[in-house]
Image 1 (cartoon, rainbow, N blue to C red):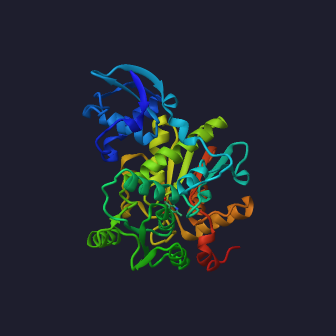
Image 2: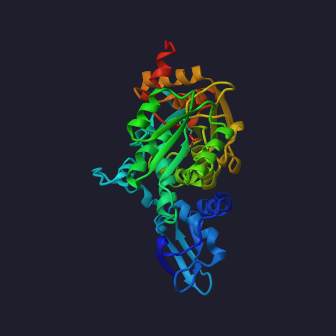
Image 3: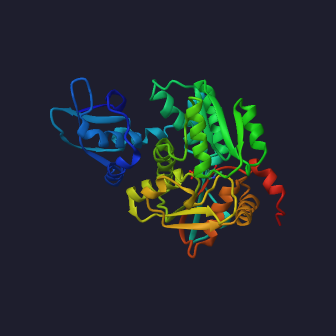
Length: 392
Ligand code: PLP
């Protein structure tokens, strides 16, 4: 057995995520690797082991045990393979490029919401608005989808990206595209606040308004335009790099943050859009801690619009591979009230979908135990919506 850098092993491209989930779940459950992967003298991966190899890769281990000739038994923890190295940060936050900048913001803080907590209820929030570009959770996927497409695929023959977004992914891509010399076109639904056009244009990207919500038809139109123009439709709704970015970073951060204060979550509450972060969180925590952590998804009530969020029936990919224990409907008014409550009582400038997550928590019958709320962004983008609503 030899331990080598995972980058040194040559493998066929990553298969679709659904082929890797059983193996990744087993690795998370055991917390260790029990067998080497088989390679030849040139470190070409033996095809039988490609699932284990790619499962380890999407979990973000740095080293991998290999053997020649036949598989060998090993007993190495994920930490011994560098699983937690993704959490090593840059304490003085001196950054030479976008890559270092985004990583210097991770882990995003986990903060106790004291006004919502008492001796039975312990409520914590992960502040995704402290990401550097779109000030949202979408920086993670914008960055990872671009790295995955351009760094890992040198044959890609376009520098043009088309994407449908309700704001945050668009802004994230417009920023991150700069370090990859990309031209970005963002398709925004009519319902999105007008200031988003200004932000995206200031960042040097193009905006196209589409008449409908981000329906399957609207997303398909982006795909057709991209084929016509030889652009890459990066497609956060289908791109497995979305799910993987959360699995590898968001979930791992939250897990180690909670371990550092000896807490095991009773429930984690997430807003649903593409379902990327909710699905990865469900997969990670239910694999690592059996089915003991409840995962709650929050969606807009029928005919309600909450920016960034969608209803499950509008089509989500990864949610169908994982277990979401409960999906709660929240109106826009309830989301604004949740936002106003946290802003007023905690002094945290959270966004509308974060407010929806707070409303989701309050709709649960029993909220004893440890609740984790994922706050995707802040309220500055929604001033148009907020000023149109009287907040008492
Ligand atoms: N909240 C906001 C503000 C968002 O921008 C998004 C996604 O665009 C979400 C929630 C939903 O996140 P996800 O796409 O991971 O389901």
